[in-house]
Image 1: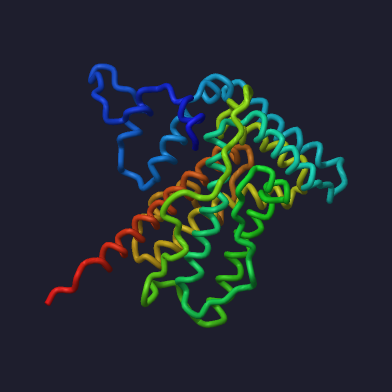
Image 2 (image 1 turned 180 degrees about the vertical axis):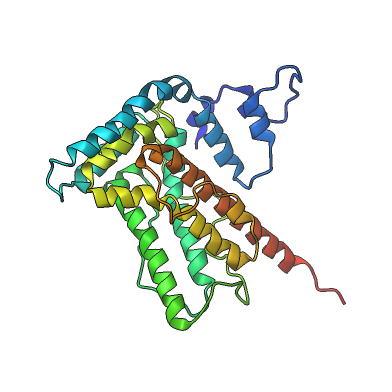
Length: 309
């Protein structure tokens, strides 16, 4: 986020969360801004809520969502006559990047770019806190610009997640090992601060919020991928519970699991709500990473406290 983005902030709820309010007419966004019940980076909370409070979310989403979900059904029918292995990840990612650059809000794009960094760090946290467990090399994706997403970034993100779960559990099984708190917790891979992300486009049409953009692009994603790829992508969202369980066992703390809304990966869900569930996935990832940042700060504070005589 930069000064030009901040200049577009207009709601008092976002400019000054600690301002007095009218008890007879409280602003819902003000309440969410000052609430501290969930772990989340303050800059992320502001960008997230501003994106959620946008006119695009209020007026455009209700109009487009029924058509977007109807399109999912139509594409599913169309796939019956298309060749079984019809797909073009290249065209998919070029169209995604085109839309992100020209229509999606700076806040939403910034949150999308952060997501790749967060996912990489959470997977590294789990892996490094399983002593002796080694898996084949994973490409932990960290992108700086939207242009870098053209290289099949979204598809590889899903593949990374499934491969991570498979390889980690195979390695644990081979060693007869269970996930549990390590002798010494390693949080060195968790970034406490900003990520190297370029400023996001702020053109005249960069107004579409995160959820609206995802709802519109879900049938596009479906069309350009095989049924197998799309089903895998949609149901990867329920692995939020799996990753949260891993973190909870390592930290010996149930809170990461309590923050998850995409649950029960053994009961696949319809793809019609994939857009909404993807936004839940993004929020769950932000909260888990923020909680790991809190744990890192707590460990650092403990290390600075002199031992009692």
